[in-house]
Amino acid sequence: MPEAAFAPTAPTAPRATIGDSEFDRDTALTLREPGVYDIDLSAGWTIISAVNGGYLLAVLGRALADALPHSDPFTISAHYLTASQPGPAVVRTDVVRTGRTLSTGQASLFQFDEQGREVERIRVLASYGDLDALPDDVRTTARPPAFPPMEHCFGPEDTASDVRPPSGGAPVDGSSAIADRLMLKLDPSTLGWALGQPSGKGEMRAWFGLADGRDADPLSLLLAVDALPPTAFEIGISGWVPTVELTVHIRCHPAPGPLRVSITTRNLAGGFLEEDAEVWDSADRLVAQSRQLARVRLA
Image (cartoon, rainbow, N blue to C red):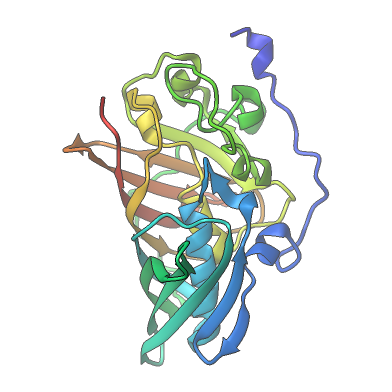
């Protein structure tokens, strides 16, 4: 592929604010009765034909923020039971425990199949608190990921699709919907898969933001940890990599500006791999961490 095909492009969408962006509108829920919410899952956050797991986690995270006395997710663990589709859904929440500094709740998202039967898509258990009340003491050996500045990284528009398989084949229909709503600039050293030359290292790194310019907050961090192309691509494995379980830890409110996301896989066995993600803000703070277990289809 010619080098010119990878020329970086700057986002041109007008800048949105928190509470007034497509992400906020598409994660907004309507309270039907205490603990029960209705939502129409947007097709704008699909990957291939299913709704992205990070977007779903943000939807459930918003419902729990409304249901619990604390508004900030500290830790949230999700089990993805069946693939969600765009369209109507119901979220049911349950308050497990409330305390002075932490509250715990669970939530499930349901849709209906062709026979009109209710199907549970995703179930989460989460603890919420007040991130602004946390002490400033930080003792860490973690360091921000080192990769090129944004102008030297490349977005899905430069690589044809964020789900193009490592063989270099044609993108799958419908696969670009979520990419249109994100500002992703991928580290060139993790882009071998886009040229049919995966490195085999199981690493993916990118600058991340929302395409409309909205700054990050704890809810959008739930999206950020699951928005990059799968590390399986760089291992040399093509196809859909569905999430089985995803746990996210939110460490603090992110500073304004683009985020840096680094994801690594160290072990693939029995058709399952882990993805460990770190999210760093513009102030060089580790603002979110996650681990997920995902399935891969081996030839």
